[in-house]
Amino acid sequence: MPRPTNIALVSAALTLAAGLAGCSQRRVMITSEPSGALVSVNDRELGRTPIEADFVYYGVYDVRVEAPGFEPLRTKAKANTPIYEYPPVDFAVSALPVDTTIRWHFKLQPALETTMPREQFEDELLQRARVLRGDAEPASQPRLAPTDPGD
Image 1 (tube, rainbow, N blue to C red):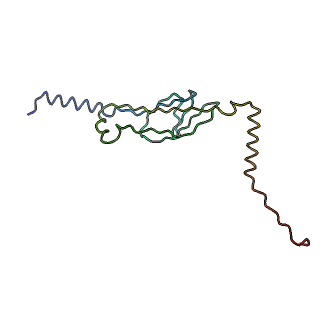
Image 2: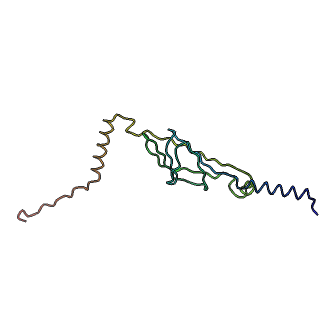
Image 3: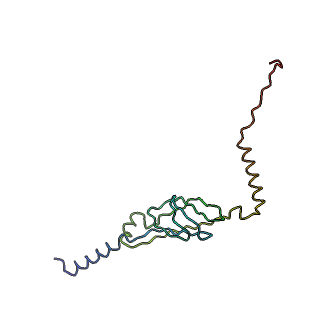
């Protein structure tokens, strides 16, 4: 028959393991240059950098980062799966409180209108518009002249 101290010890260990399980956290920390940029992940607005958010799945996320005076950035960011999340290691680690923080940093480029004189920016913008308009217009169709002037 087991001794009462052994039962109490096993009970305490099981209670402790049950209490620790599920305390793990997965977070992504997002920073940017400049700070204060608005961040959306998978079309869900998270807020302004620096910001932290919980996530459930490892993998690739669509990210949009925007700040006034800077070109908006639309990109993908990956949350890599750490080694302790792969079987069979994950089973052993599941009883421990493991916090995972993925870090993403984005550098925004200044918008063209903030990096060049206004006149130059407008001239180049109009020039690009003319080129695009020319590319969009269908090529003129050659007209056939009648072979007999009497037609």
